[in-house]
Length: 202
Image (cartoon, rainbow, N blue to C red; front, side, top):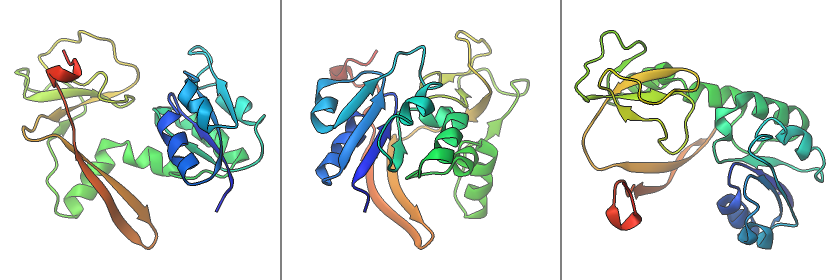
């Protein structure tokens, strides 16, 4: 097991705290440099929004040798992950895997091959119903930012590519999985608290 871990993300706090509980020496690079992050890390570099994530690989080079784990939206910047993978051991998904799972065509193909239902998707808006039954989704997003019901208007600019996916009503849930060459292990399932007024949702 590694004893020195570099955690990188827009917010590294949760992941760094988990690593600290494992007894690892933790360092971090993120946008906030929270006090509770500093409490569990040997060293923290707070990066300005203008420098994130492009400057991350050069900043990472100044930390002690050891593996790196990324979170907090860095998967939107695969080229940065590729640069990190050339100089450090990546714990987690390799850039090639990130590309695949972020491609809705690939995810649809895998789902269908394995008997899983998958909502209809379009890659141009010309044939998409404009009654809100489809969602416009940016391919580069985090936490659902930019996902909106499609009514034929682009009220907000989208960075990069986008696609349209059928809205499916139901209980919003997420699952955490550990996938290795030996198989898949379900770590947990959570109900997502979306639109709850007591959470100050709009």
